[in-house]
Length: 382
Ligand code: SF4
Image (cartoon, rainbow, N blue to C red; front, side):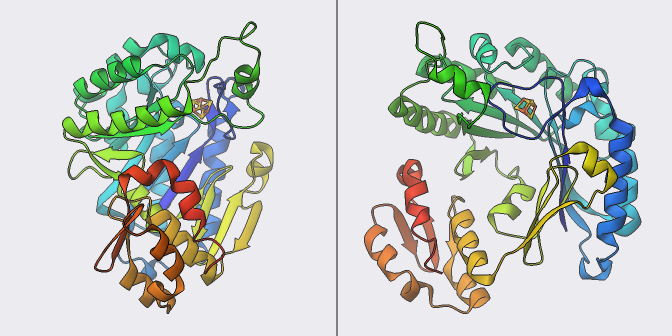
């Protein structure tokens, strides 16, 4: 079983963020953990553990800033999960952390989280350039991020992932390469590199649309952003990182099993406020309102995901992986003739944007910037 747990607390809201966030100054950690434990009771009431002989294979705690909860909170949650299903002996248990969370146990005792069961940590570094961090309104400085990661390593963490961002206001190819150079020097095992998206109704949207005379949030040109993506891939490849998904690169053996399950369109149970799950043919979303969640942790919406949509998802998520999709496996699962159903798309794109090798279909790396248009071609045909 694959499980995602959402922890919504953050010290402040970053200008570009459109996630559901609860400001930490309002407290409420204990009540939240109580509600998560209740949710586990309720969801597992209809789950037969015998259907999951491998136990809990991955748990990913994302946010928010999950490292604001102390390790005792996670001990409680792990014990509660263990009441229903044991963790597999090789379970991947990931915690997201931010270097700026100075008031947390994470800052002083990162080993406590390791000791309570986490074995992978994903750190929201974003950039190692202080002017760019300011533009993102992140609370940490680049040097603090480096010290934080070195502290994790000293405390015994051996599977560390960094989130980096390109396309940040003021960012140049030179500053991006400098961030990558410093990130590589940290000897981490995994790097996710995301293009900054200007989401609707965020302060960043307002700031980036202000006249230049008033604001100073010039985003890099689209061409420069695409160039940063490819130069990032190439710099990281030279340092031994293999791209296994559009935005994710790992040293061999450190690919995220939890995220691979998403791209394999596998089921996962989602817990916590504002969490999105995919479970036995249904997509569900818990309510994005902490008060309502505390009252009823099952509040939210559930939507059927019919087989046609499952097929579309399997193709669209699967083509994000460097290895692509196994057509034969999809044909068996969905009872279709893939080559016939998608003959038109295959005719138009094979060789230019798609590579078909036996029954393995994948996207060319050079076509990734155009992937939104290309992948949308698979929608509605299923
Ligand atoms: S730390 Fe992450 S989740 Fe929290 S406000 Fe910033 S971007 Fe959003």
